Amino acid sequence: MNFQYSKIEDELSTIKRTDISHMRTKKEKSEFIRKYVNNEVSKFHISTLDSKCPVYELFSDGTVVYKKNKTSEKEEILFYEIVKPNDFFKFPTSHEKYEGITYGILSYEDCIETRKIMDDLLLQV
Image (cartoon, rainbow, N blue to C red):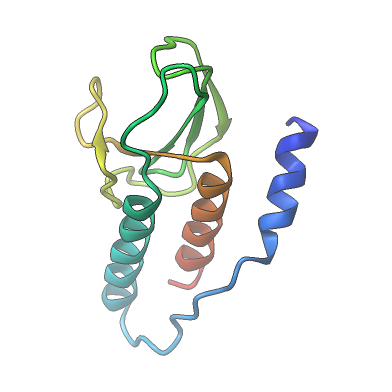
């Protein structure tokens, strides 16, 4: 991993923790997590991009993919999945090739922040 990425990840490690321990059932916790994360991704989603800007895609399983620009075929996986099944979350954009897979286009920082939120909340179930 690149130093730039690890530095940003360290800075974001102080993200406020959302406590869901007061919820009684696993179903109640799961629904809250699903809605909370879906809303966060929708809020951060970048719907219009400059064709020359780098693109970071956060997939519904937590995978983060980097593309040099919007039209680039070449992609680099920066972080791998953290949740299965990969259709637990529903993000704003459906994947063209894989049914049920969704993603959001976010800034790198928002991808990291959202992954940390996903991980923190899912560990509380």
